[in-house]
Image (tube, rainbow, N blue to C red; front, side):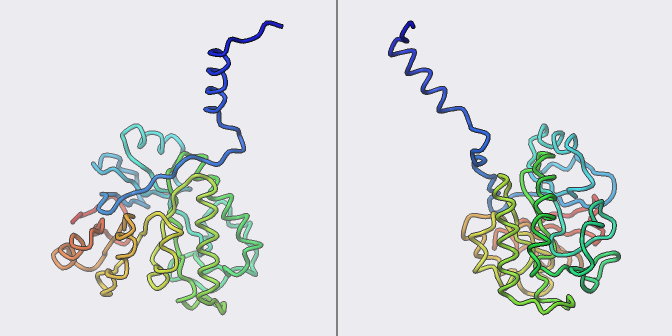
Length: 259
């Protein structure tokens, strides 16, 4: 058998090192930085003309083609999912056994989940995050991540919430996706290291925005929305804290007013 020259052998070795085995872990995750502009649209016909680098859209409602189109326009795309509440209108709603469904969370057709039952919920949430990955999303926004502070119908504790939120973060990271901590302000000190950014609603209205500083100090974006407070009352503080702040309407349609 003809032997390879040392130069050819070296080139083949280098090429082999560049080939990723199918079982290798995904590459580095996207990391949005403080102050990154964004659009959050969860209802209505998607308007892709907003000139911002990040879109946060519903994971079920939008296709791989939509995500690809946003990528072609230079945008990163976040996949909105509810991980702490059941929604009767989702295609996988029938897979959730009644024993994990709690009280309503204030939105029509939605009920809190018993996040202690990770034996039931982990495979269901893994399948949802698989969907986000397969459609090409860059990140996940898991909603309803603070059930322990609400009247869910279950005796949830802070420890239960920490365990579940870290589980959701791991599921996203294992699939190469970034993941945001939604609200859950009291547990930010424990969870800032597990999440790549934060998403917050109404911290200005309730005087809580300073609680999000650990994310900014870690170089991680805080995507923030107000609904009832005019921009003149929160944008100055948002700029000081380096939050990515918007005024939106509750239906989270196209309309937005950025700081």
